[in-house]
Image (cartoon, rainbow, N blue to C red; front, top):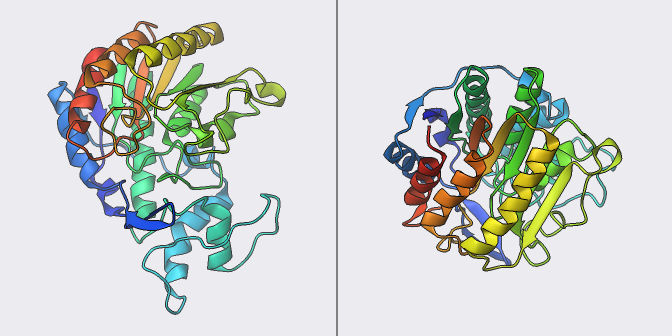
Length: 339
């Protein structure tokens, strides 16, 4: 299987992460790249570097206001006397229609949903090449590859059109889906991360040209809390084109596969001719976030069922954090896909 990776993704090295009021080391570390690459190579993947598609495909989903913010905010933030090394919001607007402040502090609050997406000097460069990685994976699928793995890092599925969150800055899976649309294909995004893909849902929520499906831990008591509930089905033209399948904490392989069958039936009904798999390996039983109890062999079974659709597939890396089984989980999934 062809795989895509750009080494410039390493320059994003976040330090800040706050959970329950406690400052902790950020789990979205550059070391994930080494583990995931080894796991992919163990499944027979051959890596190559992405090509640069420029800002156009990114700006198709993300506002120019937001992209200017991502590219310039760290420099501006660094001019604040006594500021932290990373851009971390300390105030948020009470509504997204609020006025747009000129200050770096105010814009950070407007464009960063939480404290898990700190911006450092290397964040924009890494996020840019993470998106280019997904775009180059889409190119390979368009050119005829049946399955391609994009090792995109930082991940993307919590990023809205103008809002970072949950370790994510640019919505890599959504950007790839838009590229498939431009190529005349009909894409479905299947998000199998343990956390709901709220940014992806938000981007496509009023649209009917991309189906969005997410299997995740019930957000009533799990991040991202405010999105991912079963009644969220889309709005306007997009009504019926978004499917959320929230599952109880501790869901095992059998429970997960039962939900996956429902998800795949919806993809078939949409008439998709290409599928973007937003691959989170954090559904594993030993992942630090401890949402589900999917086993390492369970990832192969998940992949086999998705591959059973018979559709070309772009696999875009989302979550899955450092723990002893992370690489083996990716090997299991990619081996289940075949190709």
